[in-house]
Image 1: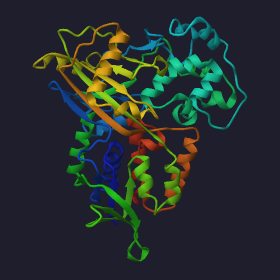
Image 2 (image 1 turned 135 degrees about the vertical axis):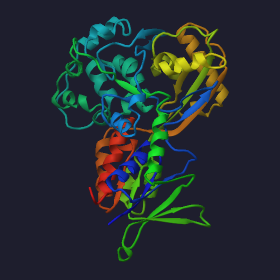
Image 3 (image 1 turned 45 degrees about the vertical axis):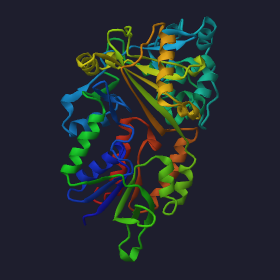
Image 4 (image 1 turned 180 degrees about the horizontal axis):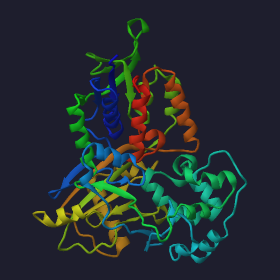
Length: 468
């Protein structure tokens, strides 16, 4: 039997779910619904001073296979690029320091690499690691590492790294969900530095790239998926918001009714199988009738908002920026939490900036952390100005006014993996599994990165496809 499918949400997860369904069941009726005018979710692009760059996610973790496998399937293998410059810096007590080597999400494997980023007394505290009694409960990354190595490691190393990934706070992010490789140290009471050392490649082994992207930006992946889906006969509808989901009676074949359109003139779309690839809040709303237990658990998951400020600075008067970028811990009291020197990091961006009608240096900065939405209430001009001010102060160099700038606000963009997150997700999936033909996927569940979202989407498609 050929089934009809509806996928709600056209971010990377929803598009990959539709792509996997088309592969698993050729000829099936597949419809993707997206409430916004464009596809891609948090993968998007913008043109500044004639140079088109990513305005959302800009790279993919290369040490997981999912993204590179998808890229190969879509015929984009020749477009894969890796950072031209990878050395990042971190701000500590008003000064820039190279990112310590051999860390695992900021957790050091060798205390000798931490000076002068940390003071002598802070490094001594790291050397004197305090082991805990074994525990099976969950704990935040920040609380655990603070107990083990002292608060300075959390405040000056882990916070800026986790802030970049989750726009969250290290003392509110689950160790089990965000850093599962460190669980043995917590549950067995063994050394976190030993675990971090064990994760490092041998000194004489070749080091594969950590991150990858596509020439022209990660946004090229969305364009390629759209082309591939349309070629497979998948229907993609943008500007269509799913307002409600109902189960159809078994006596008329079961399945789902997805209600869209204005309340006075609703449109009902029928589907045998349904995948919801939306953030936690809209997913909770859509599942409130058909999977109320899942809906309740999803409502417990908070999200963080952030903004990406992209600046095109005049090449002639812009000082030289060293390395790929910098991270700013919250304890520094600045507004910008990170900056990427895009022309340094990605060769194609540097080439495009030099070739622009008015040559430019492209720079991206990110702002916003969990429960700091007030920062994002400032207008675009204020955010551009504060980025220039913060970077001028950090670098000790005047950052000139931009030729062109763009502010991309991502409201509720990043789910917060609070302690207990894995149990929460397990409960959601258990409740969803009680509804035949229903699956969920996306950054809410098993990881916020692109490879994790792809894995989540493929698993959802396999779950609802009867031929799999």
